[in-house]
Length: 202
Ligand SMILES: [Fe+2]
Image (cartoon, rainbow, N blue to C red):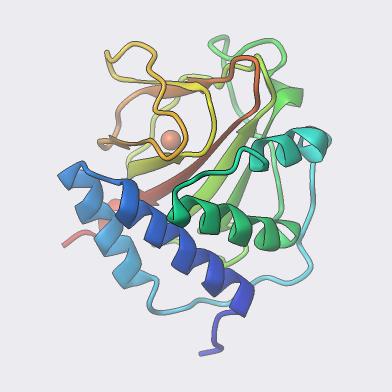
């Protein structure tokens, strides 16, 4: 098995350090622990896939300039900046009327590790979403449980929670199948997500 590239491994070390530092929910901690264990085995890395979308220009730089006094978050932002040129940003193919009218041109997602990602594998999904200001992501749900790590202002919704603002370094856990969404206010929204599909659970 080829070793993982230094830039990806450095990012993974930083993001799981940040999850460890910021996640309190026991279900989320258990999920992250299983993801970290699975990631000990690298899968092949796709080459030359880096692609930005127009929404990334400007908004991504803005979102990444938020900074943090928390060392684990500062390191995460630094390592993500180094990794980002290698990533393929995409739009969500399907959405409904719960999305704002500017959703299609106002968002970008990238899979870092997972199906179609930089490290292409099916047992883990780790990625990030960017929303331009004043964009609402559509309601959606999925079978894998999910832990978010939020790196900006912005509001989130899951189940019957109503909108809440985790803030920079805020985290929350989405149980399997729960309906959820996010929306930005006057600033771009940037949030990492780590999903654990069922088949990897023991
Ligand atoms: Fe999700």
